[in-house]
Image: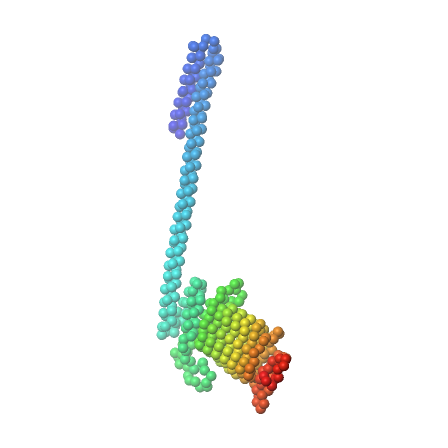
Length: 380
Protein backbone atom coordinates (compact mmCIF):
# COMPACT_ATOMS: atom_id res chain seq x y z
CA UNK A 1 0.00 0.00 0.00
CA UNK A 2 2.89 2.43 0.77
CA UNK A 3 4.58 1.69 -2.55
CA UNK A 4 1.35 2.45 -4.40
CA UNK A 5 1.05 5.85 -2.68
CA UNK A 6 4.66 6.71 -3.46
CA UNK A 7 4.17 5.68 -7.09
CA UNK A 8 1.00 7.76 -7.34
CA UNK A 9 2.70 10.86 -5.85
CA UNK A 10 5.73 10.41 -8.15
CA UNK A 11 3.44 10.05 -11.16
CA UNK A 12 1.53 13.21 -10.26
CA UNK A 13 4.82 15.05 -9.76
CA UNK A 14 6.16 13.84 -13.10
CA UNK A 15 2.83 14.75 -14.76
CA UNK A 16 3.02 18.27 -13.30
CA UNK A 17 6.63 18.65 -14.46
CA UNK A 18 5.74 17.35 -17.92
CA UNK A 19 2.67 19.58 -18.04
CA UNK A 20 4.71 22.66 -17.11
CA UNK A 21 7.69 21.74 -19.24
CA UNK A 22 5.58 21.01 -22.34
CA UNK A 23 3.54 24.19 -21.98
CA UNK A 24 6.60 26.43 -21.42
CA UNK A 25 8.57 24.76 -24.23
CA UNK A 26 5.76 25.38 -26.71
CA UNK A 27 5.43 29.02 -25.70
CA UNK A 28 9.18 29.56 -25.96
CA UNK A 29 10.02 27.62 -29.09
CA UNK A 30 6.81 28.07 -31.08
CA UNK A 31 5.74 31.74 -31.29
CA UNK A 32 2.61 30.76 -33.12
CA UNK A 33 1.28 28.72 -30.15
CA UNK A 34 -1.23 30.44 -27.98
CA UNK A 35 -1.43 29.99 -24.25
CA UNK A 36 -4.53 27.79 -24.54
CA UNK A 37 -2.82 25.52 -27.03
CA UNK A 38 0.22 25.25 -24.80
CA UNK A 39 -1.92 24.37 -21.79
CA UNK A 40 -3.86 21.80 -23.83
CA UNK A 41 -0.71 20.17 -25.11
CA UNK A 42 0.82 20.14 -21.62
CA UNK A 43 -2.37 18.55 -20.29
CA UNK A 44 -2.19 15.84 -22.94
CA UNK A 45 1.43 15.15 -22.10
CA UNK A 46 0.60 14.99 -18.37
CA UNK A 47 -2.40 12.73 -19.12
CA UNK A 48 -0.13 10.43 -21.12
CA UNK A 49 2.15 10.08 -18.10
CA UNK A 50 -0.85 9.21 -15.91
CA UNK A 51 -2.17 6.77 -18.53
CA UNK A 52 1.21 5.04 -18.71
CA UNK A 53 1.18 4.71 -14.94
CA UNK A 54 -2.34 3.26 -15.09
CA UNK A 55 -1.27 0.75 -17.74
CA UNK A 56 1.68 -0.20 -15.62
CA UNK A 57 -0.61 -0.72 -12.62
CA UNK A 58 -2.98 -2.88 -14.67
CA UNK A 59 -0.11 -4.98 -15.96
CA UNK A 60 1.21 -5.37 -12.46
CA UNK A 61 -2.23 -6.31 -11.18
CA UNK A 62 -2.56 -8.87 -13.96
CA UNK A 63 0.80 -10.43 -13.10
CA UNK A 64 -0.15 -10.49 -9.43
CA UNK A 65 -3.48 -12.15 -10.29
CA UNK A 66 -1.77 -14.75 -12.45
CA UNK A 67 0.70 -15.41 -9.68
CA UNK A 68 -2.16 -15.76 -7.20
CA UNK A 69 -3.98 -18.21 -9.49
CA UNK A 70 -0.78 -20.17 -9.92
CA UNK A 71 -0.34 -20.28 -6.17
CA UNK A 72 -4.00 -21.36 -5.78
CA UNK A 73 -3.43 -24.15 -8.31
CA UNK A 74 -0.34 -25.26 -6.45
CA UNK A 75 -2.23 -25.14 -3.16
CA UNK A 76 -5.10 -27.19 -4.64
CA UNK A 77 -2.61 -29.71 -5.99
CA UNK A 78 -0.98 -29.90 -2.59
CA UNK A 79 -4.42 -30.33 -1.02
CA UNK A 80 -5.16 -33.18 -3.45
CA UNK A 81 -1.86 -34.82 -2.66
CA UNK A 82 -2.46 -34.36 1.05
CA UNK A 83 -5.96 -35.85 0.67
CA UNK A 84 -4.56 -38.81 -1.29
CA UNK A 85 -1.91 -39.33 1.37
CA UNK A 86 -4.60 -39.12 4.05
CA UNK A 87 -6.66 -41.72 2.22
CA UNK A 88 -3.65 -43.99 1.96
CA UNK A 89 -2.92 -43.46 5.63
CA UNK A 90 -6.55 -44.22 6.50
CA UNK A 91 -6.49 -47.33 4.31
CA UNK A 92 -3.31 -48.50 6.04
CA UNK A 93 -4.90 -47.75 9.40
CA UNK A 94 -8.05 -49.66 8.45
CA UNK A 95 -5.94 -52.56 7.22
CA UNK A 96 -3.97 -52.58 10.44
CA UNK A 97 -7.22 -52.42 12.41
CA UNK A 98 -8.64 -55.32 10.39
CA UNK A 99 -5.47 -57.30 10.95
CA UNK A 100 -5.63 -56.59 14.66
CA UNK A 101 -9.30 -57.59 14.69
CA UNK A 102 -8.57 -60.77 12.75
CA UNK A 103 -5.68 -61.58 15.03
CA UNK A 104 -7.86 -61.03 18.09
CA UNK A 105 -10.60 -63.17 16.52
CA UNK A 106 -8.09 -65.92 15.73
CA UNK A 107 -6.79 -65.83 19.28
CA UNK A 108 -10.33 -65.87 20.65
CA UNK A 109 -11.23 -68.79 18.39
CA UNK A 110 -8.14 -70.78 19.36
CA UNK A 111 -8.68 -70.10 23.06
CA UNK A 112 -12.36 -71.11 22.88
CA UNK A 113 -11.54 -74.34 21.05
CA UNK A 114 -8.90 -75.11 23.65
CA UNK A 115 -11.43 -74.58 26.46
CA UNK A 116 -13.82 -77.12 24.91
CA UNK A 117 -11.53 -79.78 26.36
CA UNK A 118 -11.80 -78.41 29.89
CA UNK A 119 -13.11 -80.78 32.52
CA UNK A 120 -15.54 -78.24 33.99
CA UNK A 121 -18.88 -78.26 32.15
CA UNK A 122 -19.47 -74.53 32.81
CA UNK A 123 -16.17 -73.72 31.13
CA UNK A 124 -17.17 -75.74 28.08
CA UNK A 125 -20.55 -73.97 27.94
CA UNK A 126 -18.78 -70.61 28.12
CA UNK A 127 -16.44 -71.63 25.30
CA UNK A 128 -19.44 -72.64 23.15
CA UNK A 129 -21.10 -69.26 23.70
CA UNK A 130 -17.81 -67.50 22.91
CA UNK A 131 -17.58 -69.38 19.61
CA UNK A 132 -21.19 -68.51 18.73
CA UNK A 133 -20.55 -64.84 19.55
CA UNK A 134 -17.46 -64.90 17.36
CA UNK A 135 -19.50 -66.27 14.45
CA UNK A 136 -22.16 -63.58 14.88
CA UNK A 137 -19.59 -60.78 14.94
CA UNK A 138 -17.45 -62.27 12.16
CA UNK A 139 -19.66 -64.00 9.56
CA UNK A 140 -16.54 -65.39 7.84
CA UNK A 141 -16.11 -67.62 10.89
CA UNK A 142 -19.65 -69.02 10.83
CA UNK A 143 -18.97 -72.20 8.83
CA UNK A 144 -15.80 -72.85 10.83
CA UNK A 145 -17.65 -72.43 14.13
CA UNK A 146 -20.45 -74.70 12.87
CA UNK A 147 -17.85 -77.32 12.01
CA UNK A 148 -16.41 -77.07 15.53
CA UNK A 149 -19.86 -77.37 17.13
CA UNK A 150 -20.65 -80.37 14.94
CA UNK A 151 -17.31 -81.89 15.87
CA UNK A 152 -18.15 -81.48 19.56
CA UNK A 153 -21.51 -83.19 19.03
CA UNK A 154 -19.76 -86.06 17.23
CA UNK A 155 -17.65 -86.80 20.29
CA UNK A 156 -18.40 -90.22 21.82
CA UNK A 157 -21.18 -89.90 24.37
CA UNK A 158 -22.10 -92.81 26.58
CA UNK A 159 -25.57 -92.23 27.97
CA UNK A 160 -28.02 -94.98 29.02
CA UNK A 161 -30.99 -93.10 27.53
CA UNK A 162 -29.59 -93.41 24.00
CA UNK A 163 -30.49 -97.05 23.65
CA UNK A 164 -33.47 -99.25 22.88
CA UNK A 165 -32.70 -101.60 25.76
CA UNK A 166 -34.83 -101.52 28.88
CA UNK A 167 -33.07 -100.91 32.19
CA UNK A 168 -29.79 -99.83 30.63
CA UNK A 169 -28.58 -98.20 33.83
CA UNK A 170 -28.75 -95.03 35.87
CA UNK A 171 -27.68 -91.65 34.56
CA UNK A 172 -24.64 -90.29 36.39
CA UNK A 173 -24.16 -86.62 37.27
CA UNK A 174 -21.27 -86.39 34.84
CA UNK A 175 -23.38 -87.80 32.02
CA UNK A 176 -26.19 -85.37 32.80
CA UNK A 177 -23.81 -82.39 32.81
CA UNK A 178 -22.30 -83.47 29.49
CA UNK A 179 -25.80 -83.86 28.08
CA UNK A 180 -26.56 -80.26 29.09
CA UNK A 181 -23.39 -79.05 27.38
CA UNK A 182 -24.32 -80.94 24.22
CA UNK A 183 -27.82 -79.48 24.25
CA UNK A 184 -26.24 -76.02 24.46
CA UNK A 185 -23.98 -76.83 21.50
CA UNK A 186 -26.98 -78.00 19.44
CA UNK A 187 -29.04 -74.90 20.26
CA UNK A 188 -26.16 -72.55 19.41
CA UNK A 189 -25.56 -74.46 16.18
CA UNK A 190 -29.19 -73.97 15.14
CA UNK A 191 -29.14 -70.29 16.15
CA UNK A 192 -26.34 -69.61 13.65
CA UNK A 193 -28.33 -70.96 10.70
CA UNK A 194 -30.33 -68.53 8.52
CA UNK A 195 -34.13 -68.49 8.57
CA UNK A 196 -36.26 -69.34 5.57
CA UNK A 197 -37.65 -65.78 5.72
CA UNK A 198 -34.18 -64.29 5.11
CA UNK A 199 -33.54 -62.84 1.66
CA UNK A 200 -30.76 -64.74 -0.16
CA UNK A 201 -29.68 -66.73 2.93
CA UNK A 202 -26.11 -68.05 3.06
CA UNK A 203 -25.54 -71.78 2.73
CA UNK A 204 -23.98 -73.57 5.69
CA UNK A 205 -23.29 -77.29 5.83
CA UNK A 206 -23.70 -79.54 8.88
CA UNK A 207 -21.91 -82.81 9.59
CA UNK A 208 -23.22 -84.56 12.71
CA UNK A 209 -22.53 -88.12 11.60
CA UNK A 210 -22.72 -90.65 14.46
CA UNK A 211 -23.72 -87.91 16.91
CA UNK A 212 -26.23 -88.25 19.75
CA UNK A 213 -28.72 -85.42 19.35
CA UNK A 214 -31.33 -84.44 21.91
CA UNK A 215 -34.36 -82.29 21.02
CA UNK A 216 -32.74 -81.26 17.74
CA UNK A 217 -34.82 -78.48 16.17
CA UNK A 218 -34.08 -77.25 12.64
CA UNK A 219 -37.59 -75.95 12.00
CA UNK A 220 -37.71 -72.91 9.75
CA UNK A 221 -33.97 -72.98 9.04
CA UNK A 222 -32.00 -73.11 5.80
CA UNK A 223 -29.29 -75.77 5.65
CA UNK A 224 -26.87 -76.73 2.91
CA UNK A 225 -25.83 -80.38 3.10
CA UNK A 226 -26.86 -82.33 6.18
CA UNK A 227 -24.74 -85.38 6.99
CA UNK A 228 -26.25 -87.41 9.83
CA UNK A 229 -25.20 -90.97 9.03
CA UNK A 230 -25.53 -93.35 11.99
CA UNK A 231 -26.90 -90.49 14.08
CA UNK A 232 -29.20 -91.16 17.05
CA UNK A 233 -32.07 -88.74 17.70
CA UNK A 234 -33.72 -88.60 21.10
CA UNK A 235 -36.87 -86.74 22.15
CA UNK A 236 -38.77 -84.91 19.41
CA UNK A 237 -36.73 -83.98 16.36
CA UNK A 238 -38.26 -81.07 14.47
CA UNK A 239 -37.57 -80.27 10.79
CA UNK A 240 -40.90 -78.51 10.15
CA UNK A 241 -40.64 -75.92 7.38
CA UNK A 242 -36.88 -76.33 7.02
CA UNK A 243 -35.20 -76.05 3.62
CA UNK A 244 -32.31 -78.40 2.85
CA UNK A 245 -30.43 -77.06 -0.17
CA UNK A 246 -27.97 -79.94 -0.40
CA UNK A 247 -27.98 -83.67 0.15
CA UNK A 248 -29.61 -84.99 3.32
CA UNK A 249 -27.92 -88.19 4.48
CA UNK A 250 -29.69 -90.08 7.27
CA UNK A 251 -28.17 -93.43 6.35
CA UNK A 252 -28.44 -95.86 9.28
CA UNK A 253 -29.92 -93.13 11.51
CA UNK A 254 -32.03 -94.09 14.52
CA UNK A 255 -35.00 -92.12 15.82
CA UNK A 256 -35.89 -93.07 19.38
CA UNK A 257 -38.67 -90.46 19.47
CA UNK A 258 -40.84 -88.71 16.84
CA UNK A 259 -39.53 -86.82 13.82
CA UNK A 260 -41.64 -84.03 12.39
CA UNK A 261 -40.77 -82.83 8.90
CA UNK A 262 -44.06 -81.26 7.89
CA UNK A 263 -43.71 -78.97 4.88
CA UNK A 264 -39.95 -79.55 4.76
CA UNK A 265 -38.27 -78.91 1.41
CA UNK A 266 -35.50 -81.27 0.26
CA UNK A 267 -33.83 -79.71 -2.79
CA UNK A 268 -31.31 -82.49 -3.38
CA UNK A 269 -31.05 -86.21 -2.78
CA UNK A 270 -32.51 -87.62 0.45
CA UNK A 271 -30.88 -90.76 1.84
CA UNK A 272 -32.99 -92.72 4.35
CA UNK A 273 -31.19 -95.99 3.68
CA UNK A 274 -31.40 -98.39 6.65
CA UNK A 275 -33.12 -95.75 8.78
CA UNK A 276 -34.76 -97.08 11.96
CA UNK A 277 -37.52 -95.48 13.97
CA UNK A 278 -39.10 -96.40 17.29
CA UNK A 279 -41.56 -93.49 17.14
CA UNK A 280 -43.58 -91.91 14.31
CA UNK A 281 -41.87 -90.22 11.37
CA UNK A 282 -43.95 -87.53 9.67
CA UNK A 283 -43.05 -86.19 6.22
CA UNK A 284 -46.51 -84.78 5.56
CA UNK A 285 -46.61 -82.05 2.89
CA UNK A 286 -42.85 -82.37 2.40
CA UNK A 287 -41.29 -81.66 -1.01
CA UNK A 288 -38.64 -84.01 -2.36
CA UNK A 289 -36.94 -82.51 -5.42
CA UNK A 290 -34.19 -85.14 -5.52
CA UNK A 291 -34.21 -88.92 -5.43
CA UNK A 292 -35.34 -90.51 -2.15
CA UNK A 293 -33.56 -93.70 -1.08
CA UNK A 294 -35.37 -95.62 1.65
CA UNK A 295 -33.88 -99.03 0.93
CA UNK A 296 -33.75 -101.50 3.84
CA UNK A 297 -35.48 -99.07 6.18
CA UNK A 298 -36.74 -100.80 9.34
CA UNK A 299 -39.67 -98.73 10.56
CA UNK A 300 -41.01 -99.98 13.87
CA UNK A 301 -43.45 -97.08 14.23
CA UNK A 302 -45.77 -95.22 11.90
CA UNK A 303 -44.33 -93.42 8.86
CA UNK A 304 -46.38 -90.82 7.01
CA UNK A 305 -45.78 -89.30 3.57
CA UNK A 306 -49.35 -87.98 3.36
CA UNK A 307 -49.63 -85.28 0.65
CA UNK A 308 -45.87 -85.20 0.21
CA UNK A 309 -44.66 -84.44 -3.32
CA UNK A 310 -41.94 -86.40 -5.11
CA UNK A 311 -40.35 -84.90 -8.20
CA UNK A 312 -38.07 -87.82 -9.11
CA UNK A 313 -37.85 -91.35 -7.70
CA UNK A 314 -38.67 -93.21 -4.49
CA UNK A 315 -36.70 -96.36 -3.70
CA UNK A 316 -38.42 -98.67 -1.18
CA UNK A 317 -36.60 -101.93 -1.93
CA UNK A 318 -36.42 -104.25 1.11
CA UNK A 319 -38.01 -101.60 3.30
CA UNK A 320 -40.10 -102.91 6.22
CA UNK A 321 -42.98 -100.89 7.64
CA UNK A 322 -43.92 -102.67 10.88
CA UNK A 323 -45.72 -99.81 12.60
CA UNK A 324 -48.05 -98.60 9.89
CA UNK A 325 -47.49 -96.36 6.89
CA UNK A 326 -49.28 -93.65 4.95
CA UNK A 327 -48.03 -93.39 1.36
CA UNK A 328 -50.87 -91.28 -0.02
CA UNK A 329 -48.54 -88.86 -1.74
CA UNK A 330 -49.52 -86.08 -4.09
CA UNK A 331 -49.98 -86.68 -7.76
CA UNK A 332 -48.24 -87.19 -10.02
CA UNK A 333 -47.10 -90.33 -8.24
CA UNK A 334 -43.35 -90.87 -8.21
CA UNK A 335 -41.47 -93.63 -9.98
CA UNK A 336 -41.15 -96.29 -7.27
CA UNK A 337 -38.59 -99.10 -6.95
CA UNK A 338 -39.98 -102.09 -5.03
CA UNK A 339 -38.47 -105.41 -4.04
CA UNK A 340 -39.60 -107.32 -0.96
CA UNK A 341 -41.15 -104.13 0.41
CA UNK A 342 -43.14 -105.38 3.40
CA UNK A 343 -45.98 -103.79 5.33
CA UNK A 344 -47.54 -105.05 8.55
CA UNK A 345 -51.25 -105.15 7.73
CA UNK A 346 -52.27 -105.54 11.37
CA UNK A 347 -51.44 -101.84 11.73
CA UNK A 348 -53.16 -99.07 9.80
CA UNK A 349 -51.60 -98.81 6.31
CA UNK A 350 -52.72 -96.49 3.51
CA UNK A 351 -51.40 -96.43 -0.06
CA UNK A 352 -52.48 -94.68 -3.30
CA UNK A 353 -55.28 -96.25 -5.31
CA UNK A 354 -52.88 -97.56 -7.97
CA UNK A 355 -50.74 -99.31 -5.38
CA UNK A 356 -51.67 -102.62 -3.81
CA UNK A 357 -50.83 -104.55 -0.66
CA UNK A 358 -50.51 -108.23 -1.62
CA UNK A 359 -51.00 -110.38 1.52
CA UNK A 360 -48.49 -113.08 2.39
CA UNK A 361 -50.11 -116.38 3.27
CA UNK A 362 -50.46 -117.16 6.93
CA UNK A 363 -49.08 -113.80 8.17
CA UNK A 364 -50.22 -110.27 8.88
CA UNK A 365 -47.74 -108.99 6.35
CA UNK A 366 -48.09 -107.88 2.77
CA UNK A 367 -45.84 -106.88 -0.08
CA UNK A 368 -46.29 -103.43 -1.56
CA UNK A 369 -46.98 -103.66 -5.29
CA UNK A 370 -47.50 -101.03 -7.97
CA UNK A 371 -49.59 -102.07 -10.96
CA UNK A 372 -47.73 -102.21 -14.27
CA UNK A 373 -48.93 -103.61 -17.58
CA UNK A 374 -48.02 -107.28 -17.94
CA UNK A 375 -47.04 -107.72 -14.26
CA UNK A 376 -48.77 -110.14 -11.88
CA UNK A 377 -49.26 -108.98 -8.31
CA UNK A 378 -48.27 -112.40 -7.02
CA UNK A 379 -44.73 -111.62 -8.21
CA UNK A 380 -44.50 -108.36 -6.25
